[in-house]
Structures are given as structure tokens and as C-alpha cells.
Length: 251
Image 1 (cartoon, rainbow, N blue to C red):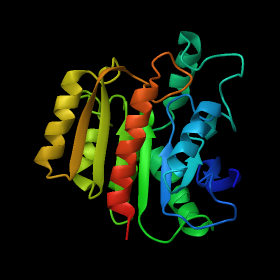
Image 2 (image 1 turned 120 degrees about the vertical axis):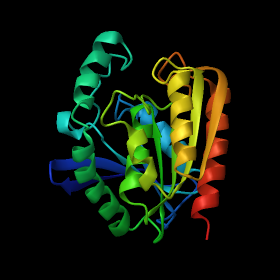
Image 3 (image 1 turned 90 degrees about the vertical axis):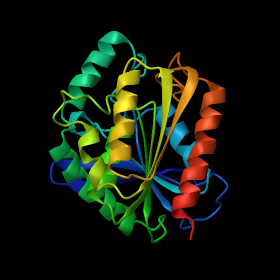
Image 4 (image 1 turned 180 degrees about the vertical axis):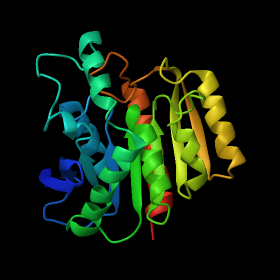
């Protein structure tokens, strides 16, 4: 089935989103729900392709436009790369609107959509995020510990900055979900000291977690429209996601 576009009314406006189901489905069907948070580049063909790959693991994926406050649909012009420095600077400014308070208001609508829309099977939720989205996935799991069973992040950024009063590491104590983090060992957005600190915080809070270092890869190793993309690492990430979601969401 093709992706279906929906609008989700929230306190700050309307989130445009897509629901993606397994490509093998020939008729509407209910599947376990996964909420996917994109990198800072937002909605674009590479993001939608990734969401389809996640759905093809056997899930219905809710893909919200995390940058809806800055515009509907694809924010990055079709003739520009999101990781060009000038474009990235603009996107980072858009990302400053994603405060913990703003995200908490968005989460209300996203969880309601999962509970309401027909593609989603009743039950607990999985969530996965990339780059900035990794921390957002952790935050969703923290705010909805009774609903989120698994939270995964790949080449996540800025998870454990001790100088950041809004660091995702500060909400780990509220998470009951299985956490999986796949890090790049050559990631300027998540240096080794942050990886170590986040692991320590997870351990100190007795979290159920797995951390894996993808050796030889850079930030964005799952992202098709970056020079950092690696097909080998992308396949590995999907295999790990299959494992994590399967453990947490299978009846």
C-alpha cells in the first residue's frame, strides 16, 4: 500500500505526517506501530525511503514532519542538499524550536494518532530516531513509559552534553522501554566522551539497553542523501532494528 498523508492537530498547529505500511501489503492491515523521527533535514525522499524500509520489517510507521513549525512537507529545496553548510545552518535554526516543552505537546498528538488511525494495531509502541531524532525518540519513551516498549537511535546527536540543561540523558530515569543505540565511531555530533557518559547514565538508572559502536562509519551512515551513507551499515541498522522491535513488540 502507498503511504497515506494525514494531518495531526496539536497545540502548536498541525503536524503533516505520513503513515507507511509494508510494501508487501495489498490491502489495508493493522501492524504494530512505530513512530519514526527524522534527522534535522526533515521530510524528503531519503527519509521516506528509510521509513518504508522500517515498515517492511513488518510495522506501520508514523512519520511526522518534525519541522512543521517551519513549513509543511519538504523544507529543503529540491535543488539543495540538506547537509550543505548554509542549508544546515538554516535547519539548525528550525531545530531550535524543538524544545522539550514543544515536543511534549507534539507527542500528545502523535500518540493519539497511533491510537486512532486504522493502520496501527492496538498495543505498545516502538520509536526510532536518526541524528536529532534519536534524542526525540528517547524523550517520547520517557514521557510515555507505559506506551513505548522500544526506543532506538542511530547516529544520534548530542545525547549527553553536561552543559545542556535539556540533554536527553536527563530523562533516562523515566524510560522503561528497551533502548538500543547504534553509534558511529567517527561522529562529530556525538564524541566518545558523550557516548561513555550516556552509557553510564543508562547503567546508573538500571535501564534495559544495548549500545553498539559501528566502527569505521561517520554521522549519517543510514542516510541515503549524504556522503556518509554506507549500504553495509544501513543493512546492519535494519537488522538490529528488526531484533529490537521484534523483542519489544511481539506478543
